[in-house]
Length: 153
Image (cartoon, rainbow, N blue to C red):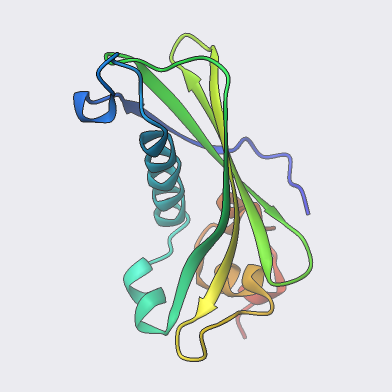
């Protein structure tokens, strides 16, 4: 299900600890930027990760793909978007676009993810419903504001 809302976005300044000896951002830092943006997006949606974990659920990454377009270097700032792509089943995608502050595409980071029931060590069959049920603003997660899981009553 795709919504037309602009994706969540976060600006991150490249730190010296994110670069290699040539002052290029390392691959692991690109992934950390994506992870940080996803965490901030979940919090902005109103989800308490502490409560999620206390209830026995944990988000898991099953696959990560980084595509490099233009290098990021020490001193750069990067805007990282976070778009959630839902389909039927136990998995979903979270896509990140990393753009230099001047608007130049630097990289994309795509995750195939799931929500694990930590008691059974199995993926939740409808992760979108679980995320929507917990979110004050499910639209930040690419879910409709009127998702059936958000209906109280």
